[in-house]
Image (cartoon, rainbow over all chains, first blue to last red):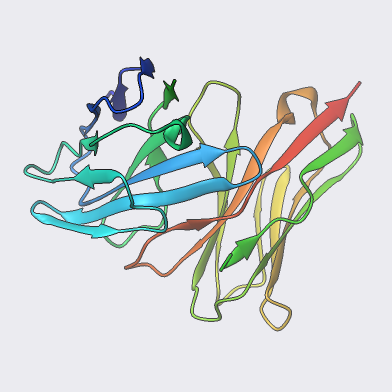
Length: 112
Length: 111
């Protein structure tokens, strides 16, 4: 049982480039979320989804897009990378009715 | 507006003693509170939770206390072990809504 899988683990982008961070879960969880972790800021919610076809913004959504075409996948797209998006990104999933979220291993992104 | 706050960025405790990590929240509508543990280069992992209808929950060496009137919760680790050295995140939620995290506290257990 793989749980939540994020790819890639590391990425370096140039300012202005676009890319997609992948997230897949095999637990049939309805809820999926993307967080970023920055020093002193904790885990801040970027976008989340309560089911296929349904997404909503979190605390820091600007510069990111998401879509949820299947229950399993929740990709995060950076449209035009900026140095302020240098961070560690975590994807999480949880079952409907549960508050326990399961996290992926994270993607460390550097924008130069 | 930070709804969940961990005001101590770091805490150092001697092995075998008690570690107490604190967390404050502002939203009285939260009905579940959780603690997550995070090692470097890994994702956070669930540690323990408490429902707002309780004031204490225990799981082995870990106990979480909830004081609703003060909007405060704490995590007690007794006895502290070197493997407990990690960053601990407090989180709060309503069952049907998003999970909100605090800033984290880095716990170091000294031999």
